[in-house]
Length: 89
Ligand SMILES: [Zn+2]
Image (cartoon, rainbow, N blue to C red; front, side, top):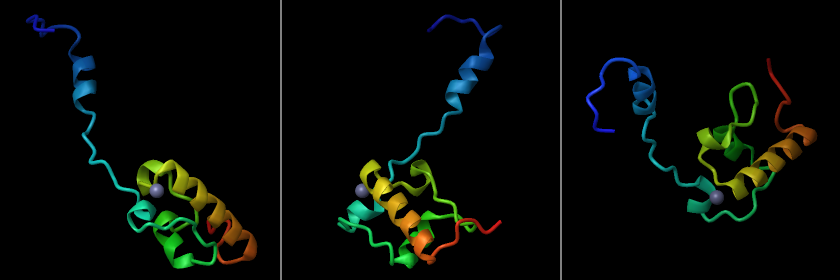
């Protein structure tokens, strides 16, 4: 749109401009070539859970789909064993 129409639909344009350009995060586990995530590796989970014990979303943690799945399974397993809290609210 090259039309000079500054009046009217400026709000929509700003909405598009506000979208930030994120740097594409590299999956931590892919970078380290970790194939399987061990549920006993609690220190590894510290980066991928909140201080309340919730699992971080893929967008925030930057893990790829495959590793995010492995991670969530491992964290849930660790919770059952008792290494991580279910929720510490
Ligand atoms: Zn990965």
